[in-house]
Length: 212
Image 1: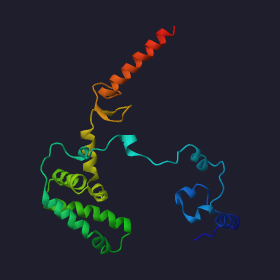
Image 2 (image 1 turned 135 degrees about the vertical axis):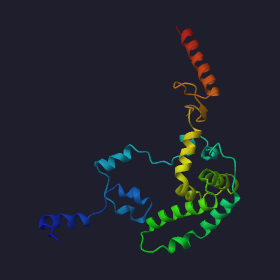
Image 3 (image 1 turned 180 degrees about the horizontal axis):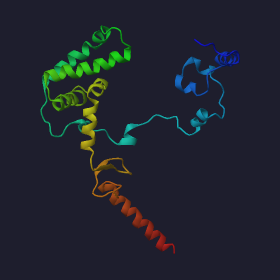
Image 4 (image 1 turned 90 degrees about the vertical axis):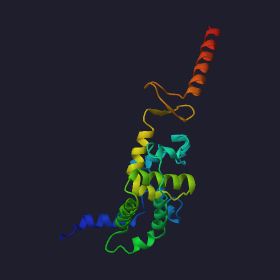
């Protein structure tokens, strides 16, 4: 291999001896190593901290109240209990199955397992919509489990298509955040908020008229 030029080698070694850039402190969170980062300066990455607010994101404020039924295929009503039972069994042996996969990185093993679980469930029922609906009902309505990542890892494409279908021709109200069916592209508010906005606009016009 070609040797690194001496002046480049010297600069790289000097850089490696220094502290990490300031923005690395955000990657590490409250890590004890946070104090080792460089002080804040006017670099592009550091200036982003003045633009991006450091506060938790609340799903309800962004997307409204979550309704799990948007994940369901509305044309499928069947629930397959055998699929649910097989899913529970596969999840209970997940670590063992991944651990027996040899010669792969951990991420590739996880990717293989995601496909493996999907195929195993489709062997129980070959209708992917029934399989997905069954798991959604089980994990979101019955079990109320917070461990739903596997469902998305194995059937995320189906869930995404269901969401697009169920939310078609709807918008989120700019006042209350609830989702409503739109009748035109100009619609901004649900029926209740539209009435309140109209009343507020009338009151403003009356006040302006009296103030003339």
